[in-house]
Amino acid sequence: MAELRSLFVRHVAIPQEHGSWVFLLSPLLIGLFAAERFQPAGWFLIAAAVLVFLLRQPITIMVKVWSGRRPRQELAAASFWLGVYSLLLVGALAGLLLNGQTEVLLLAAPGLPIFAWHLYLVSRRAERRQAGVEILATGALALVAPAALWVGEGQYDPIGWALWLLTWLQAAASIVYAYLRLEQRVLPSVPPLIQRWRMGSRALLYTSFNLLFSLAAGLTSLLPSWIFLPFLLQWLETLWGIQHPAVGVKPTRIGLRQLLVSTLFTIVFIVVWRLG
Image 1 (cartoon, helix red, strand yellow):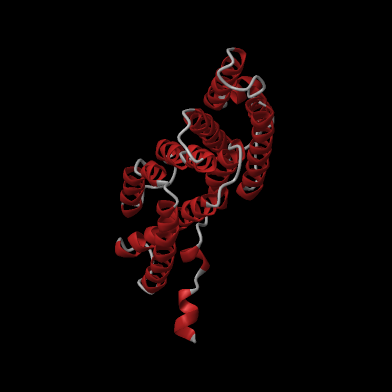
Image 2: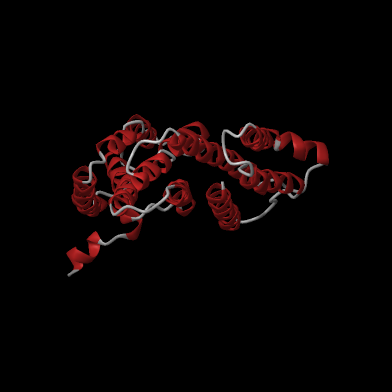
């Protein structure tokens, strides 16, 4: 019984960066709702996407064990969950193949070199504060948006690439803004206004670009006219964050607010896209 209990270790089975789930679920939901209907194959896509995301944790733990960062006792649990997730993933991929969704599987390819680079950084104890790698990783996760759209429509639709780009832009801006909030929290006091704006310039640049890009796409009828609204929400949040630095605020509270904003973004995006 003790040996069995040792396999069910939460931090080995489930990713501990709880905020990272939104970078998978947001584009997945957007793609599913953007499709005209929900196909049975959609369940296999959902399962495959979640399982691929979960696989990252035991593999990362294994690399940490091999590099001396975690105790060797965790290797058994990591191997167990790697086997469970891999077996279930094979079943989900088989379901997609049987439903004729071969092309969708190719969208996973860009994530492989990014994940390999992440594992290399883990082995070197250098994975933290790697905003560039995180942004690339969210770009790979955002590919689930066109995948969900194509599965739902039962065919390739080039508009799926617009979903991918928009969800990636939102995720990238969200990461940069999160780094700003974490940088603010260690300040000894609220800095002068000019310093606040200097610190937030990169986050504001990202969200401003997203807002202007989505506004232009809507005005030129390339995308739904009101597609700028969810990006306006993110832009306003950035302005608020610059004006109200998170001095002394706990990371959990910062993460919860980020989750709330991303959830609202996803809901508004879906509504605007459906109304078209």
